[in-house]
Length: 262
Image 1 (cartoon, one colour):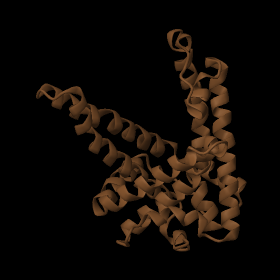
Image 2 (cartoon, rainbow, N blue to C red):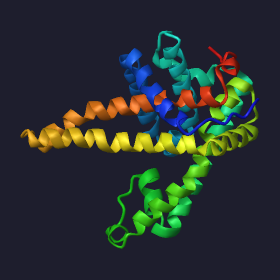
Image 3 (spheres, one colour):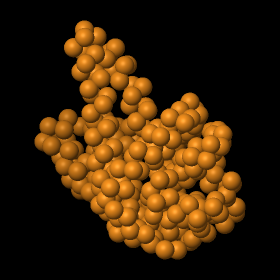
Image 4 (tube, helix red, strand yellow):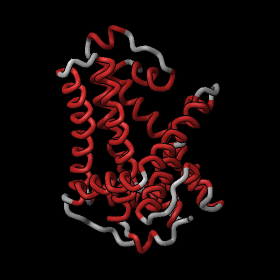
């Protein structure tokens, strides 16, 4: 497989592709993400397994979102069952995907552990157990410091796992090799990914806030203003997950992608 290097501007094109594909099948994309949230939320409510399931299933979700984006671009119907792509890619791919899920879960717990060095484990307990952070951790800034440390520690994890699911499921790569290739591809195209990430951050922070501000100026209550901004926030999120495949398509290519499991 050829490692491709693209210009930084490609990151903006990935963002645009997410909105274009959302415009093609918005309700199908919404139904897909609702199904993902419902199933994940239901399993998360179970004892023991529910603590780590949301982390474990992220890799399967990523693969499903990429397949969904590809089907939308090809004007194929989109159903929530696309989220099962990782389970329908064959026994070997399934084993590798399960391994990716386990490795990702361990990696995120390790990242939270890094944050715990600064906040005494407040954020780890908040995210995994739902415990409210102690007031002291908020007052002395240790929770914020822990969040910053965890965010920085998560960046290499994100790069390693970004392209790993399709490389495992669609190219039959062993998990460790897929993580290596994903990390190298992302680092070699770090400018494009940086522009991609900044663009999404600005969209998530600015558009819902702008709508709330305008609604408040027009006399809407705080609750109504928040409700009016919610559809925009959801649309941005749906465009975001539909943009994942564009980075894969750009760096790996549609030629190789023709071997996808349908």
